[in-house]
Length: 278
Image (tube, rainbow, N blue to C red):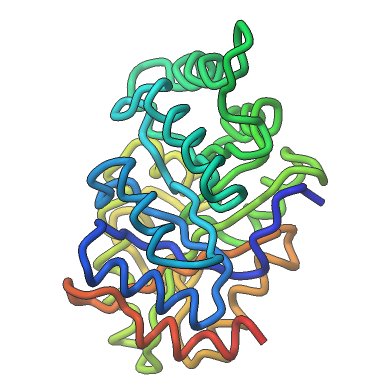
């Protein structure tokens, strides 16, 4: 078991530091969720993490992810050091987003800069993770960080990821959730979100690695949607997500989608909490 413990379930979401985002973080904490995984895209900058921590009391935050082509190692190290001093244990650095021709080498070099060097503190291995999908990235997460944070994977692939990571590294899976019992509507909401990812080479390769075909990636049939998104009642969703735990995940971060843009899905987090956190 990893030294990191975020509980069985947390939340994946984008919080931008607005008043509503701060209220949403506090609401997630009040509902009992132990961790929030911050989507990198909506994050306006590293100071937002401090704002979110200041607006809450105990809930932990993980960047899921900080893109290494957006933030420098010096910026990340400085932010981590500040929060380690003022809110110890409440911030873990999740990294990824190496979109160039040599992502493994890029991330390796970034991790080199996060290591303690010449007596200067960096980001400890036990407080950094990688957004890893493929075997080589999972191996890098195993060898140089405290674990991996994959997205858009099936429980079957969770078991394969666990085999690569070994027993002592954190495996935290982000999974799409639709709190909707009508199959047609639930799948339409999930399909709209999922449709973006097969266009990205890394995700297309990951989905094919999981056994989906080119036709599946083009047509997004129901069996693909049902494999990658949990929908139904809170109990049905919890049963689906627990398959990742059975397959070897330590933690599942629910990424609630509603089919509309706007405020954070606080009501859905609250409705799911009894089934997930009891």
